[in-house]
Each structure stands twice: as structure tokens, then as C-alpha cells.
Amino acid sequence: MRVPQKYPGKKYYKGAKIGQYSCNPLGKNPGDVWVIPNVKHNHTEKTVHPCQFPVELIERLVLALTKENDLVVDPYLGVGSAACAAILHNRKAAGADVVEEYLRIAAERARLSWEGKLPRRPVDRPFYVPRPTDRIAQNGHEWLLVHHPEIWREIQAIIKPIDADKYKTKISKEKTMKGKLLYSPAALNARFSEDFKKAEWEESRTSYWVTEDYNLIRKTLHLPPDEQKREIESAGRRPIFSYNQTDFVKKRVAVEIQFGKYSFVAYDLFVKHMAFYVGDAIDVGVEILPMKAMQEQMSSGPGYYEGALYDVVRQGRGVPAVPLVLVGIAP
Image (cartoon, rainbow, N blue to C red):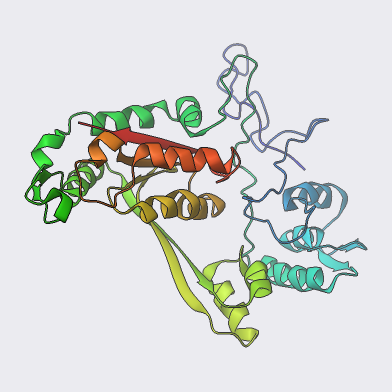
């Protein structure tokens, strides 16, 4: 049983072993403290169980204490994390629980483990441990400054050169602003999209299947799309295909450009970014929208920065539970 070395490529720089690895390239023995992320709401393994533990935790025990084809028994099976760990490493598994829903989920996870399709956090994904001198990210902006300052600089570099006055091309037909020259949301969206694409930002989609049964949605929420559909059909319900699309993603940062209706801004903040975050596709969401001073010179209806900021503050720091950056722009 080995875990990744802290410095896997380190080599001797002098002496008889110069140029050779100074540590075992297969990994090191686990230390006294095991750093394994717990299964929270946005963990890819998360089910309905209130105190689920990660498969990786039991994998270490299985690898260290059993051999292939041994039997691993968990008398308090829950949703089957121990059984999954056993199956993934060619062990037999057995268990029991008093909650029927947990047993159904455990059986499904065991099947996915057998087929190599179990949603799980990659064991080799780095777990960030901040140093005392680090600035620890507490929100979307701080997260970018800590992890991807170059992405934040790039977003600013895309926004700054755009001359908004060039896109004041829409002649209003509204009663209160009839004949007035206004900013064109369509033209602004097109310009922003063009510049983000030039910087190699790409559209991203996440698809899933839904149905009218609440308990069935809870059961299938964290399954891959094809498994969701199969489970819904096997329960005798109608699977309905759905998806979320985000404008641009780069290095797990999503950007939405929103000069549309207020409802679109709310959907981005409280649904779309969250869907990609829970699906482990992004780490932070960025929403670009006009300041009130600019929004007043657009057709009625667009959302604006100050209103969106109020909505986020009113919900409290934990809602939505995804790091966000609101970017308000003005001429």
C-alpha cells in the first residue's frame, strides 16, 4: 500500500547514485495522518446518506489488509463504500443494513464498481493544503487570485479594450424611450463572445435525465447520464433529457456574459453555475453584466450588477454554494 511521493521526481544530485531517484517512484508508505477529502454536497461520490465516507479511505485498508479474492464484510453497509472499495480491487464483498433505500443505492454502486463506471474522486488528484503564509480563498475572486491569477488578468484584458459606444446602435421603439439610441445587447454579446473565443475559452455542457419522482431524482442525481436514464426507466417512469450550457470555460473557470433579461442572470447565479460546480466541471463561476448606469441606456429588462449583488448578499454567504465573481461593466 503506497501513496504518491511529495517529490516524485526527486533524484540524487551527487555521489554514487547521482541521477537515480532518491525515493521509490511507485510511492511512499502512508504517514500517520491521512489527508482525504470528506464527502460533502459537491463531492462526486455523494449520495443521500448523511455521513457517507469516501471510497478512497476504505481502499487503503483493503489494499493493506487483504489479498485478491478475499471477502470484505461490512455489517453496517450504508450506501456500500466498503463494498465498492473491495470490488474495485478484485475482492469479494458482503454487507447488511436496516435502511432499504441505502441497500438499493449500495447495490447500484457495487454494480457500477464492477463495470468500472463508479463516479469517484481520482485518488491522484492533489488536495490543497495551505501554508500559514498563503492567502486562503474565501470567495470566487480570492480563489482566482490564489489558484489562477493569470485567468483573472485575462478576463480583465478581454473586457478593458471594448469600446461600448461602438455598440450603441439600437434605436428604441419603447414608449418611454422611443427614438433614443441605446446599447445593443446582441452586439455586445457578440463582441464579448468573439474575444473570449480568440483567447481559447470554450463552451461547455452538462447533460442529465430528470423525472417527476422526487425520491427517484435523489437516487439518480449523482449517477452518469446513461445510468440515470436506465434507473428511471426501470422504475417505470418517463426519463426527460435536460442539460445546462455555459458560455465559456477555461481551467475549470466558467464565464457567463449576460446582457439579457433579469431572470437569465438569476438562473446563471443560482442554477447554472451550481450545476457545473456540483458536477465537478468548474471551481468558480464568473458573471459579467452591466452596471446600473449602463443598464439604464438599454432596453428595459436586462439585469444589472447592483441588483445581482443584492440578491447574492440577501441569500447569505452559503447560497449559492459555489465561489462566484460578479463583474459589473460600464462605459
